[in-house]
Amino acid sequence: MKPIGILTFHRASNYGAVLQAYALQKVISERGHKAVIVDYRCPAVEEGHRPWGLFRRHRFPIVLLRCLVAIRKDILFGTFRKNRLDLSVPMRAEELEKERDNYSLFISGSDQVWNDVFSGMDPAYMLTFADEKQRYSYACSFGFDSFPEGTGELYREWLSGMQCVSVRENRAADLAEEIGYEARVDLDPTLLLSRDKWEELMTPAEVTKPYIFVYTVNPPVHLLDYARELSRRTGAGILYLNNQYKDNRDIKRVRYKTPEEYVGLIAGAEYVLTNSFHGTAFAVLFKKKLKVELETAKKFNVRSRDLLMSCGLRECVLRGSEEDYVFDADWDEADRRLGTMRARSLKYIDLIAERADQIERE
Image (cartoon, rainbow, N blue to C red; front, top):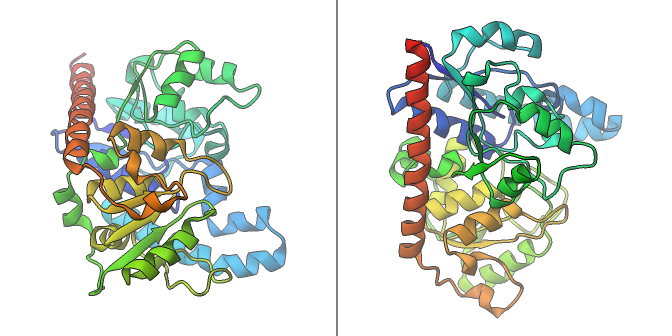
């Protein structure tokens, strides 16, 4: 039986990117289908996440400071890919079309594979190399609120022939509608796996005292000051997963953690403070005392907002008031909503698997 091929950001040195790739592959394999992560070397992803890409984006003195960090991250995430993901042979864009007959069908997603900046507007993530009957997406994200100028028509063209357009956020569904496509909204793959499944993967945190776990992907605005005050009020220490060395030296850092350790740090925390979508997702899975800063120094976190609202967890949004020190989320209601969304998304994956079987018989 030919495998199902997954094109995603598995080569990004980012916790959410590799963990969502792992989750989607695992969910498909649990349904009796072999799933292979197509080891596509997207130029934009390679430049953004390999150490040598720093030399194109920064002046030489800055490169020297950042290169060691990038190398260590590359090794950490490369080990995860090698040990946890079932990968194809490495492929460049011109090789994708030659390989399409070796797969029953392809799934693009999840993650921000349709983000013009992160993917470099690469049509491979819209599966333009494949036959129409092979083209499906799962929980893809544009990562923006409106199409950058001049890109709407390109997205319309490249998504033409997609058998089903599945996105991750309500706003992404609205954007798809703007260019003429009806899209379904599905859960990020990390949320398809149960807490028990993630506990099997994680490395438990070796911390005996209660701690506040802080994880940011974009520069925070008020989150670190809030962490300091929460620590003062509760007596819990702060563990900040961040590879920077220069700023906020009063806060204890944890650096260079594997994806397995990342999950374990969230699972073991008393409180989770984040501006990351996947930080939010794992905190929801593990039912943590959670606050999410949606407005970062770079952009508004639409993805975390939509997830929290969908789960009925608006109390988890950091608001800059005394209410931030109250943790009374209704986890029973969140579980119910998440379960409904999970069942719907898994049903869609079952339909994709059935279609793969049909293609094999044709």
